[in-house]
Image (cartoon, rainbow, N blue to C red; front, side):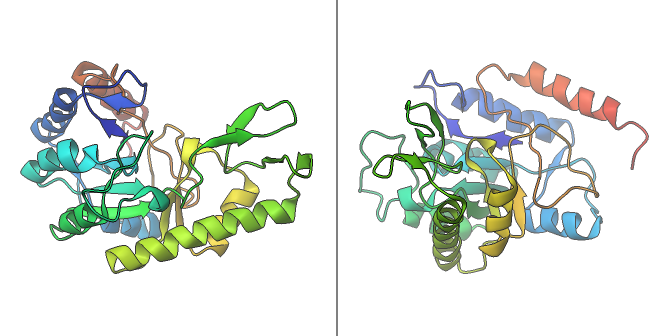
Length: 258
């Protein structure tokens, strides 16, 4: 399950209201679903063994402060673990530091406070490649993790330039986050879900072992660790009725499988 921003004060698409998010967590609890930790999830991907029945993994992208102020208190009450894929270059050094013209990100003290509960894991969402940039001379935009147009050279970056740019960013994020959380970070969520062979190859070279995308799907024991699907449920239109429908559809699709 993927969420992004939890707030009642935004009309953006990838946002869910605070009350709606709380109802999502209540739905999981009342219907005997069991959120698992990233450690348990990784063990399942590696071994195919998952002792927890009705397991779900709750993930957040972007590292917004609303994770700390609105989402985490609800999940802590239910003792639900979760993982937040943070954009390292946007994290604030202190709670007081502001970030102009962007949705407020987490601060490092907030991250450390949540880590101490044992309910939170932090993964990478790149160091600073979560915007769109021109991909051709006409200024058409695409994800920064795709090849970008180099205005000074009046051409698209070549493959080596592209690989180097990705590698530097992915490595800075992984090393910096590992230092912040006190253990090796080996998971990355790709911005906008954009992926290609070079992105995945570079992620592997940068030390990541698990790559999450935005393709809807159930994670089975046969999942490709570099193409882990997720259902994006952190949307205003996904109320508990739609969430229940999603789980019923999944159950129907996999009926009879262990």
